[in-house]
Length: 332
Ligand code: NAP
Ligand code: BLA
Image (cartoon, rainbow, N blue to C red; front, side, top):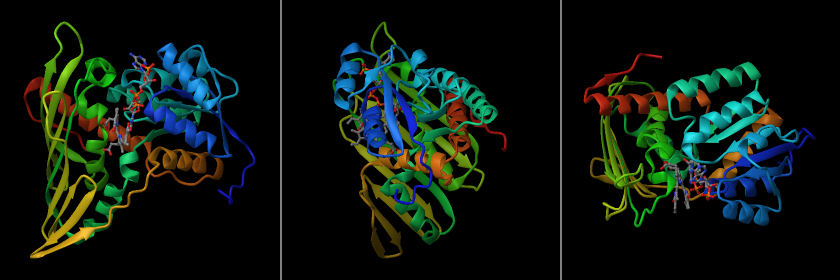
């Protein structure tokens, strides 16, 4: 940060008061290039606690926040259903926008936002902290050693109980599971590029007479244009008992296996442990990279177009679930 050339300080507002919003507030306050001006929340109680903790005043609503004259940048860290409408109003008000993924719940809304940001000449950045994490860094570094990849498998299962009406267990606040948990797909499109076709299944364990669910299980099979096949599994909730996070990539010259934060490269009889850095502060890194981009013109690690592409794949899986058919994607 010592090499910072510009003297200007970015005025920042955050929509949301949860985990992501707190990590953002700390990152903004910890960087002299940015100033946290205001926040808008949902429940009064949590909004007040947030304002107390970071010593700021709340805006009366997100609609008021995005119009705040002191803001250059709006960070959207609230429920998925509200991402697109808030981002749209913020861009229209001439603010730069940072979104916690997903960009939107539908590709149509995502495309509208990309076009609007371009038209306004403002940054539209979608955080993809999974790319900054140690597993993905180790994976990218070792990918060259396994040759042409034929098959990938990525399973994340998260038992949770009780789930008791959290927004992440609500069908429309959270959205289609592979859209909401877009990082699962994005890790693969980041390394393998375009997808040719998908198939998917989805099961919810419903809470009667509500949009809430107790658990969900989403699966997908993807065929990439490079020939690789991938199986994805995303499950969470009260019907699961064993937490699982495994990523396997099988190549002609070897296999990469990650279980949680531990990785290894397998070639013939040889197993080589992989160094997975345990760098913390992924939201802080993302925030710093955004400030580097806005104030010092440094390139960002991901473009909203790439997030949009993952959203297209997620939506194709949703379509496959609805129709029971394989869905093909047009080349981009
Ligand atoms: P969180 O801790 O549960 O916070 C959710 C925020 O949304 C809180 O301010 C909450 O307010 C508010 N909220 C809850 N229900 C609402 C409703 N019905 N209408 C409007 N607001 C509501 O969630 P989070 O993990 O920070 O996630 C925020 C966003 O970041 C999500 O889009 C998520 O996908 C994304 N993200 C999170 C992570 C992560 O590591 N946590 C990583 C990547 C992306 P109350 O507390 O007052 O209810
Ligand atoms: C991703 N974590 C997410 C997402 C949500 C949460 C909603 C985006 C959707 C998804 O990809 O599944 C929410 N994560 C939680 C909650 C807990 C949690 C409520 O671990 C409760 C403990 N995020 C956190 C916390 C950590 C965290 C406490 O809220 C770690 C200490 C990390 N969450 C984290 C990371 C991702 C993520 C690294 C990116 C997903 C990825 O790596 O693919």
